[in-house]
Image (cartoon, rainbow, N blue to C red):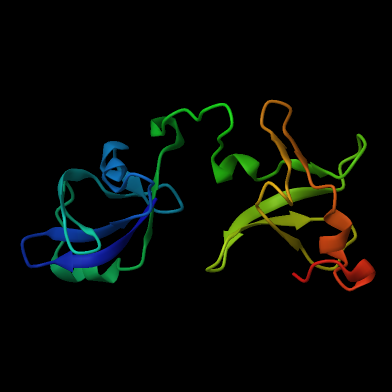
Length: 171
């Protein structure tokens, strides 16, 4: 949801970059944690900086301690996040979902949602495949994400799994 950018000055404030759609919303989700669930930052107040926020935290750490946490990703507790609309989802909810092409037998499972700097990609594990497969998370490539049925449909999954066959897309 955000990242720590280090200390701001010597009064215990910290710089935080928000990744949320509404950048200010990051500070409404309660304590912010590391990936293991340990609370890193409990915002008391936040004000905008140049490309980040300057946050006064509840935690009383020294400048060097905040600087040591630079680059640490910030997470919020899932129960603090707003409910999604009908055609929305959180990437976390896709992990572990079965992937179908056509028919009723799953062909793979979503391992992760990745972004290597361009667009979001579904990383899919296919049983027996030597490596995971990456499929762009677009309506054209992933036309069905049915959260209620826990079902993702990627009709052209075999083209992504074997890009050299049939002139399919390159990974």
